[in-house]
Length: 350
Image (cartoon, rainbow, N blue to C red; front, side):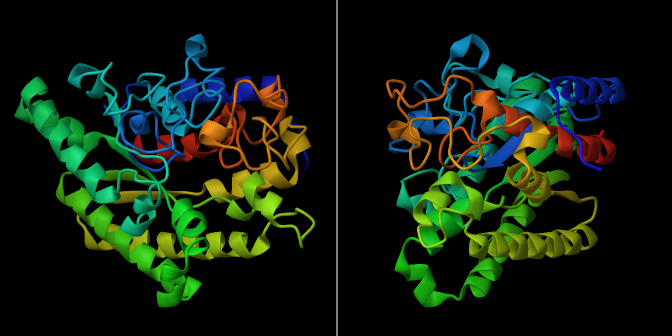
């Protein structure tokens, strides 16, 4: 039955989540991935892919741009809060924070990265192997801060969020010829899944036991893809959505096998695709008015530095928009998607 995602319904959902929290068995949220979960690491690296300026962050606490590719908070923040931890997860490379701040949550993610090292090279961002190196450094600092026994308990009981894959397809495979010359798209999916498996295995070897793995969204419906889909009258690029579904299915199969093979490992595949797709297909049911274009600037192709605070086209109310820039959802969309996932995560890992 159809329903409208009104503010009071959002409030009730949040209340039920809060009521369900007793003493969380998750002492920290530890994050790896791309811009879907990057809370500001790109601020301090030599890349053009940044968002530490307005209008990014205009709806964040204090109206402060943090390096999140959003007008406000992103999924790790909402998930952390739902588990009774801090309402925001700090970026590991942010000099404003230290190991005391990171003890209950830390983000190693980098906007623009992917499983494929060639993807991170496109915009000179942090590759996944480097995210793991930062994590090892964090482990050493955490043990010095808490002592070995307590730190190892935090690392073992923490919830690890892993979210990436979109850039591998949109910034790499479909943009440059190298990988297309080596792989069919199905073969490239398999290649990425094998890289994901290796990464998760390494994370397990470093002590992770509770992992939430998110695949890719309906990437053919991002405003940037609609803009370039001239022959399709600026509708969704359904070919890309089919690839997303196929890739996500392979990730789920791989995760199921790892759960059986690695003792004590629990990977929950967080299905963000379906709820995101529902929002895109029937935005009015969730209180949105605009889905084809984003809030920032013209909403057709702008992100990062092209998303200007001085543009007369930037919307005044981001809550009416599904997308904040041409590649990333608004805080409201992030909140709805996160609430959809949080119930499953609390049931699995609390």
